Image (cartoon, rainbow, N blue to C red):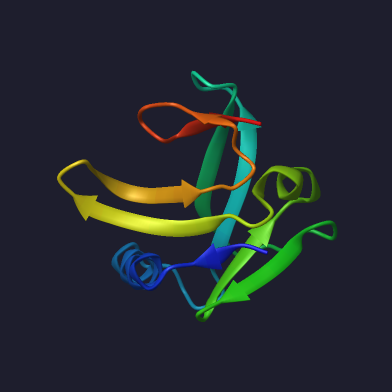
Length: 108
């Protein structure tokens, strides 16, 4: 399960409208190798559900996660921060044993 905070939901809806994505587009979250901690998050809009995807919905936000990435993302919360310490989507991942300073990569 991937959870979404109210602030992340608001920003997803706003960004979706601003960039001209239709109602058939949802969020795809995946994990890829790279970054200073070894693994990186990838977040994008997508309108294709693959046969092996897991689909989650929280607060009206539908999220696609591929089978491999789910191992790293189970229980994660997607948040959004626009404070002084940074702006953007943040992943609160209980599986991460270490994260980098920028918050974009992690290790398990």
